[in-house]
Length: 547
Image (cartoon, rainbow, N blue to C red; front, side):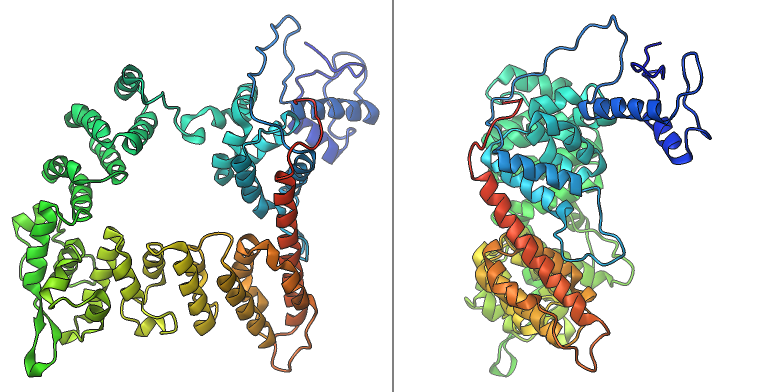
């Protein structure tokens, strides 16, 4: 049995055994030794040092006669600048050192900055330093959300190294690093992978083909469709969202008769996203028979007569007959018809009125909520920015009084349809009018870094909350978003907020100190983000062994 040099301790002693001996003491928990007395503290420390080096190198002791491993493959990407390499070392070391005592303090949260740093490094096209591959793989093992960033950055050398350590075998799975796809221009390789590949590889292949040649992807799917499992058919059908066009209509119409209810529902949803499809026209006819203008007394309003039954043809077109608990059948059927109907039909039905004018019309008999909610779902499905704008209304209007939906989740989805600049401006107006208590979900759909008006609105709202003596920890989520999403150029302007304000009599005890810490951390994080980006943009900054 191989032993650690000069200690007599077996080289294959587990790291956990070393940790246990360190905690309990070598007298109470001695390590095994190949002959002679039990090892003392000096021998223990020597063994721990050797094991530490091996862990960092991801190398386990092997038999002396074992063949050396195949060398790591080359990675042609340029190396990290020296300053960026040092920063990555700091971020990875800080990821395992959370603040103690419940208060976050004024130091930036390095853990939250790792994804941003990795995304920027990948955008610059750098390769990971060889000496940092082990801590990078350890970070990816501990946090699955980091894997999509770390594994491409680690590149072929990271995959090579993962093969030597069972704790990193997750990196070798296609689901962890993204399914490996052949060149989609190689027809033979494409068909071979489609016929013999793993499910995740086939889904990824179909998605890649849809981006490049939607018709070829559909033909590939048609060839095996009858033999696929129901759950696989559902995933394959969902991939048609990319590049969806009227060329897919005949296939989707056939899928309406699928034996799987979920497949039928997905086919109906996709068809309803094509305003000129046959299903969309059928749904339009049904919806417009239920929703009509009422011109009584000379003023136009909306009259609603919900369907009285859900017949077989409606069910074939994706209408689910049984409502969820707490919903009436007729309102449930009406909502499904309206959300699947092309939004353009309502302009013709109501004398050419715009979406803004339509959502402003009074709706009879208490049907406004159901009708507007269905229009919201239709706008999200059809990605119609005009209707999204109309259903959102002015940001100053309280959500409960708005023209569309009071649901912040649905408002977030409507906002996602708008162009990024308009989206940020709307959320800025919402924050200015209503504060931050209901804005968290809305901020999450805004592009990073936040545009100037949005960033200023968020900071002003935080400042108002501080001056009002509000609980600072109530705004910790928004403050965390601000640390990651504010433009780093705002740091100097925010420095004035880092002072501890005089506490009001009705303020929460100690709130001033908490607010001061929070703004100091915000400013420090913004300056650190600016430094990180400058380091990554700095080009080659020195040499290291893997250069």
